[in-house]
Image (cartoon, rainbow, N blue to C red; front, side, top):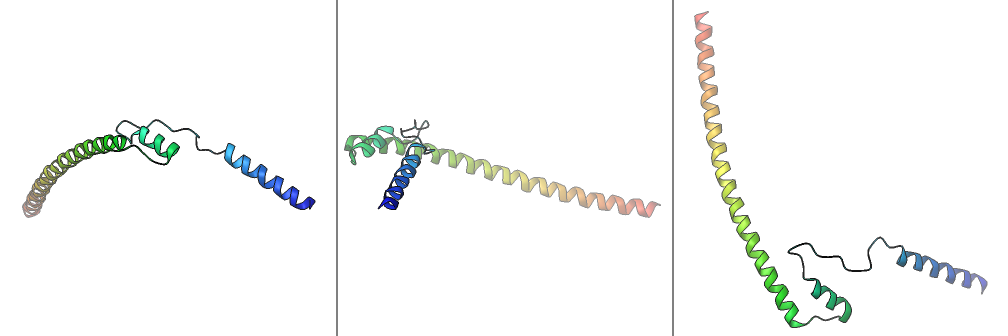
Length: 112
């Protein structure tokens, strides 16, 4: 019976240490700008449910962020296409210069 008490008290102390010495904060952190609505998280954590108006507000916020990210993605894709075009043009110029170099080296070798 004494062994069971020691084991029980050891388990309780380890459990308390794990709970109170956790590296994770016990309170909610502020969400980054454009992050998830903290009101939704607070209600979900406290009540287990979320009011419909908060979900709708969070959905509107997410829809705005999605539109913004899609616009940024489209701009980046356009920039990528422009850069790929510039790269292809530069590669063609490089090839032309290499051919010109070989021709000049051939002429130099003949002249010597």
